[in-house]
Every structure is written in C-alpha cells, then in structure tokens.
Length: 54
Image (cartoon, rainbow, N blue to C red; front, side, top):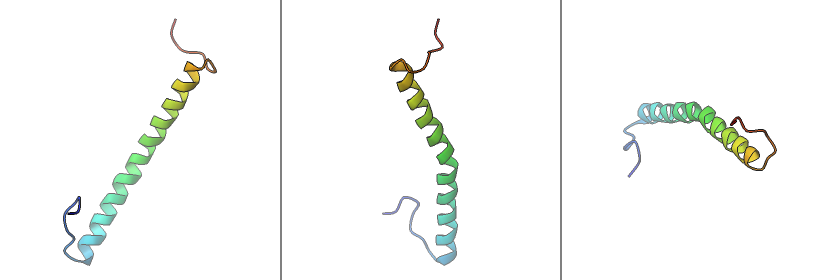
C-alpha cells in the first residue's frame, strides 16, 4: 500500500513524483534551520556561545 495511492499511468506517476519532490524541496530549508538551531542550543549549553538570557 503506497502512501499516495497506486499510480494509474505514466502521467499520474510523473505528477505524483513531482509533487513529492516539491514537498521534499520545501522541507529541506526547514530541516536546515532545525539543525542549525539545535547546534546553536548545544553550543550555548556547553558555554561556547553566550546565551541571550539576562
């Protein structure tokens, strides 16, 4: 059982593949921001970066 259903023909397969690619491309910057945020939090936790608290 596929996630987006079963492809009917070649055009449908191409369209669904393009939609999945667009979702992955849109999610990549979100992933990068999350990774950078996590690295920054770890560096603040280890005292390598000053934290913004008072």
